Image 1: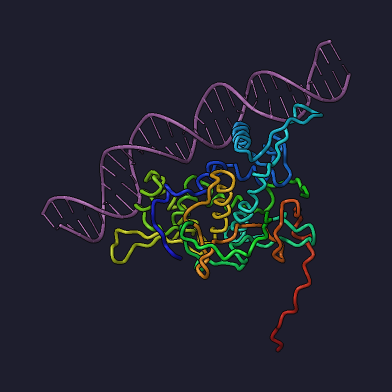
Image 2: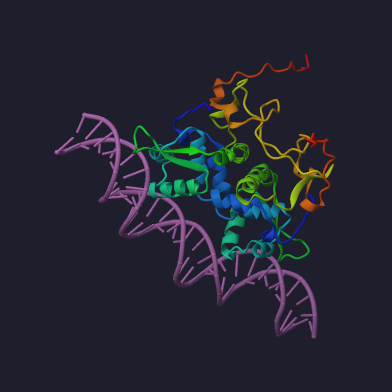
Length: 163
Length: 163
DNA sequence: TTTTTCAGTTGCGAATCACTACCTATCTAA
DNA sequence: TTAGATAGGTAGTGATTCGCAACTGAAAAA
């Protein structure tokens, strides 16, 4: 792979930003629980076995980052519902990629339950890296390149309203 | 999405295992630096600005987990080379998914440098979730299902050596 | 031989984590 | 309408971990 050593810290990279939101202990496990349909403090607490103050802190941070939405239930105002926002739901690829890596290299066992396509009941594909045309890419097939050094593909002609 | 509340902790899931290896502070940033071609202690230290004892601890853990390989250089035996193993390189999809999420929802700016396909110089596609046939899936198109409840697709006949 | 470099280790104060007990608002039953 | 019971937190305390700086030890360079 092409190597490109330079000042990585000064480079705009979404990874530190993502870790700022999700990098603390428990954050990903809370997210997984939310994907699995848990919505309430006591559900998270008893399922994950996390300390209550830490859970309160993490839920607050996830809400502050717009990953979960906090909403008291109208029929029982003691109950607070934590629900994934669009931003939170968009972490699913990252979570699945991490989980699949753990299955492959750590547990050696396929996780259960598994995400299946509702349309045909078949499990989803493994998360992979693909070229712009969909070909699967290995690490050796790629290199790092500055955004401004990239020559855009010839774009298909776009229809345009002419005055 | 189909909801399936149950004892998540007892379920075999690769996510806790992955977080055991990669969930601590700095681990992902060290990995990113390794993907960017850094190989030596002082390179990681000066680039990331991480404390030396923490860096030593994280490199040791990553080596213990088989994510990095540690090898003294033959020409200068003071120098230790840390190199991604196959297991470590296989974290790339997870790292990119996280980074892309950070770009989309936190920084709002495409990261630089960017991974491009060596063959045509075009940036890689965004990491997505796909059905077994390659269709892109949204969260609403999927549900959780137990592995043993899945009816396998009719598999294409396999050629077999007959004695 | 002396100095510099690389890859750590050690000591110490600050921050974070986990465990337990407590608190407050709300709901339910008598 | 008062007495629990429940949901969702806080507060206090000790154990870990983190970050900074200084130090070490082996190997290379001068």
